[in-house]
Length: 245
Image (cartoon, rainbow, N blue to C red; front, side):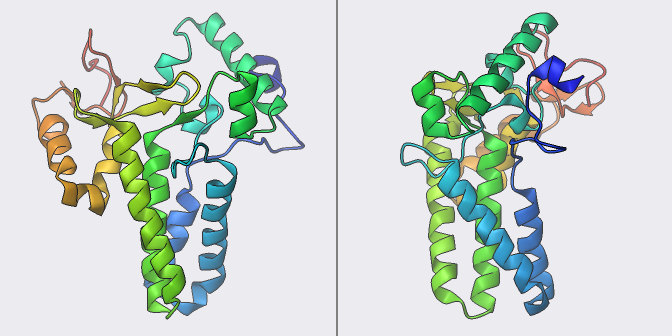
């Protein structure tokens, strides 16, 4: 039924799609809290981050790209509204097309770009999901005396933060958005996910986080509705719907 709706994507019970590396972030936090007994988790988390950096980055950017709306966490996100039609029938067809062309490109971003696959996008949850694990993995390695590895991870976290500012910052809306490498365009969209990168220490030091908080987090600003802060998509023409909190 799922493949009928969204296209052929399963190998046994798995799909080739990826998620933001929250498991690596959890492993990094456990390594900081529990120390050497978690070394196997620490090594696997670093291997996970290396795999993303090797297999899902393109054009010299540190930020990994998604190749299907399902890899964004929700195909109904503010960013995906730029790429997936709101009409259900058209959206299902578009998702099927994305599935076919993504699997034909073997989920390789450079092949996907060359073949005209319609979605090669850097997005904010992945940006935060790349920064935080590297920062905490660096701290965990430093505590174990693995200074060379710690320095490399910390330097990479800094480059990630720089790329977040370069590619994903929307000064007009004071929020982090997405960037479509296929169309070479910024994908603007208002939603809570756009606030996540602002928690990165580097961006706090740069002053961007205070701007984000002032614009979006205080009551009475655009992301606040009748029942509190909006976790869903905020549409400029309608604001926060009554049922969204």
